[in-house]
Amino acid sequence: MLIELKLFGGLGTHLPGTDGPQWIEVEDKATIAAVLEKFEVPLDAPRVMLVNGRHNKSLDHILEDGDVLAVFPPVAGG
Image 1 (cartoon, rainbow, N blue to C red):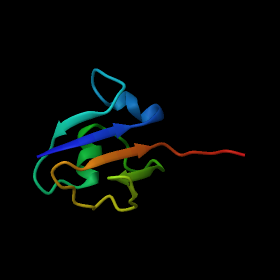
Image 2: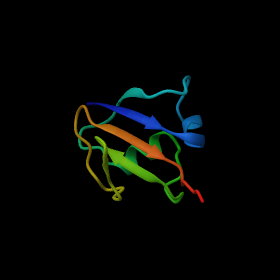
Image 3: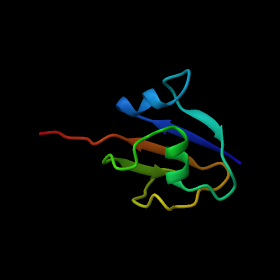
């Protein structure tokens, strides 16, 4: 199945060849954790994850064909 993967900030270095979002092929019923592991994004790093624009905290969330997974590094401000 195909999903769109968007890695922001320093996480973008884990995407091969481009800085922008990519449509990638993943196994059916792939979890967020499986996708992040595939691109060597550390699972223990704090981050914000969105699936189809909605906040998602679970690495065990099962993705569906056509989903958009956006992952942001920790954000701080003040």
